[in-house]
Amino acid sequence: NLQEKLSRVFKNLSGRGKITEKNVKDAIREVKLSLLEADVNYKVVKEFVDHVLQKALGEEVLRSLTPDQQFIKIVRDELVRIMGEKNEPLRLVHRPAPIMMVGLQGSGKTTTCAKLAKLLKKEGRNPLLVAADLYRPAAVDQLVKLGNQIGINVVHDYNKTPVEIVKEAVDVAESTGKDILIVDTAGRLHIDEEMMKELEEIKKILNPDEILLVVDAMMGQDAVNTAKVFDERLDLTGFVVTKMDGDARGGVILSIKYVTGKPVKFIGTSEKIDGLEPFHPDRIANRILGMGDVLSLIEKVEKELDQEKMKKSAEKFLKAEFTLEDFKEQLQEMKKLGPLSSILEMLPGAPKVDVEMSEKELKKIEAIINSMTIEERRNPGIINASRKRRIARGSGTTVQDVNKLLKSYEQMKALMKRMKKGRFKIPFGF
Ligand code: GDP
Ligand code: MG
Image (cartoon, rainbow, N blue to C red; front, top):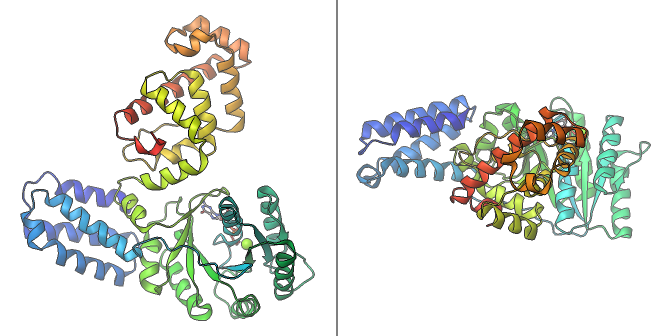
């Protein structure tokens, strides 16, 4: 992937005391190939390469003591610039503020509507979901189900037209004091006149503050072309790029702002309802360069974790008193963030830890730890084979389960140790 390739280029560059013009040109050639291979729009690549070349051949880089780092900084800054510099927040002015979600079938509209509703609710807003995708009956059911899951009302009625539903939703929002309307609309497999007409009609009635086009990162340049057409017809206010967790090559996220002039406002990072993040070009640039997306992680952690509790357990790690009881608490907290492996991915150089935490497994872990003596919990080193058998019997699990738990604990402890040394200090707020 792009990230790995670019890091390789930079590794080759680093370690050389002085860089010549030829080195710079070679490195830029590699960057160019990486970008093209990552399916970045060729116009973007050309401008990118021109800018980087111009800056990198400046005296500053060639004479710098750390030319590789200078070079990386130039590439990073240019990545950020291409993606739009800073996060563009939603601009919600009306009350209720209408947000219209549009896009091709399967891009992730319905899911994104629910994710966004949840995100806004967390920020103290009071959104209402509107099922205006009547092209497929299943789409209404899908949104209603998601709405139930997150405790947000969904306006729906199979017997009405999309325009009628939207009108009704505005009334419902006004009479129930909702301040945001999130409208899910119908897509098609390809751009289609009937779909565009319907969207234009809804737009006219709704007068939305935001029209967000949902595009699938995996679609590469097709998504960018789709974006152009939708923008011409509907004058979009921004994009949501979904499935950034898949093995998309980065082309969409690096091209779409440049090609359309409209910003990416959010990215979808998992199938789960929590998998939507505000888009921060600088963080993605860092992620692309393999520096780890520490800032997003901090944001996530701050939002989800019980700060006080975390701080207390964090203080314990610092004193190297990370007992199995702390571990249990930690797992419960971590669970709110999603799988630990996906959190660790955001950290630079974090060890691969595979702690899958389904509800069932958490219960198992609790049972196992509960079957240990206080001494065993504080000092797991003493847990020998016969103790393991006793613990397994007591907790209704197997010795393998106990072993698995102890291994996860050791890995976690090792990670905490590394954090203590300072490398991962910030993410956990201590
Ligand atoms: P729609 O046809 O545009 O409404 O698309 P849906 O919301 O039904 O989503 C299509 C599929 O994409 C579903 O299986 C979603 O779970 C999945 N999906 C949506 N967003 C994401 C994402 O950010 N990451 C991943 N991995 N899957 C997603
Ligand atoms: Mg849908």
